[in-house]
Amino acid sequence: MKMKLRFVAFLFAIGLAGVFTAMKPLEHGYKVGDEAADFELKNVDGNMVSMGMMKYSSAKGFIVVFTCNHCPFSVKYEDRIIALNKKYESLGYPLIAINPNDPEREPDDSFDNMQKRAKEKGFTFPYLIDETQRTSYFFGAERTPHAYVLKKDAGKLKVAYIGAIDDDVQNQKEKKEKYVEVAVDELLAGKPVTKSLTKAVGCAIKWKQ
Amino acid sequence: MNHSLITFDWISPGFPELAAMFRHGFFSILAGVLLFSMLPAISNGQSARIIHWPEMQTMLADSTDSLTVINFWATWCKPCVQELPYFEKARAAFAGKPVRFRYISLDFASDFKSRLLPFISRKMPGAQVYLLDETDYNAWIDKVEPTWGGSIPITLFLNNPKKIRKFAPSELGYEQLIQNISSSL
Image 1: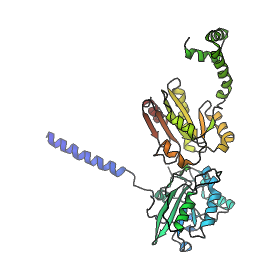
Image 2: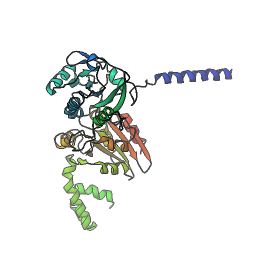
Image 3: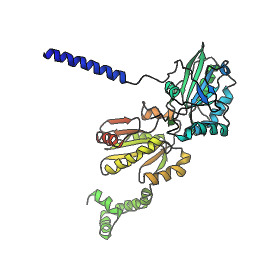
Image 4: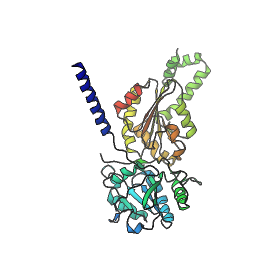
């Protein structure tokens, strides 16, 4: 009888362990070298944008920046994001900006306000809203701004860089370490990216509650 | 007359206390005068200042016999601002205990006077606030805590003499904060 009880307790423990393992959140968030999945998100002009669309058929890769309206760090980087696209779109690395925030938690980041900001600043690249937040979640974006450089490799999109745009949020240093630019330059030269991961400080993404 | 009594008396010295201070010697008087001259600054919450990495490093390595609660925050960070009242409540609750509260603001140095100082006098008068003016985050963030991804708020509970070190990677509730402090003393 005692043995039987012990056995039942043992089975129960195994079952419990199973439940807890299943409860662990799924692994998400790309690492350098991972293959990135495409997305289809609404742009400020009302059209849907994906990396696989015709417009981008000749792109060699992408600079994807998770950013938003309200965050002071994102605001500091706006002009530099515009400059990045200006420099690299023609070289085959167009920039795509994605706002990951839940507008209910941060009304400044609503679609209307995104349209206003894109117009004010004259964004020359798509500024997409991630309404379901799935894209941001799958990428593993955590803050704004959070930059990813993707490289087309035999029809697949490989993550080549994750992190900050440069080492100077305040835009005061004469000599910056321009992480994203260096990464794209290295890819364009056919070299591996030397610094493929940095920490991006910024505003935590406002996930839906 | 023990030392703690003296420091208390300096805040509102009457004549007997002044006489005692004379007996205690010239240096006590000098220290008293110095403390007095600093009081307006302290009470206005103007003890905030801009620091750089070496001073931050010294703070992290402080081995005096007490717990240092180091909170990284910024005025623009909503969850940080939401948890601040809990820290201020805890600071009051642990007054007189060997606990120091250090608030490390990651606001931009250009916002120090216009934004940070008014915020402090409004929301956290008397708190020890330091604006860490080091915006090349990748140069130092791992030295604070390797698992810190870059989000704020984060809080460190450091009791170096007792080799206690705790890291809270996100915002804390009041109960969690108290628990962390009590278990790090």
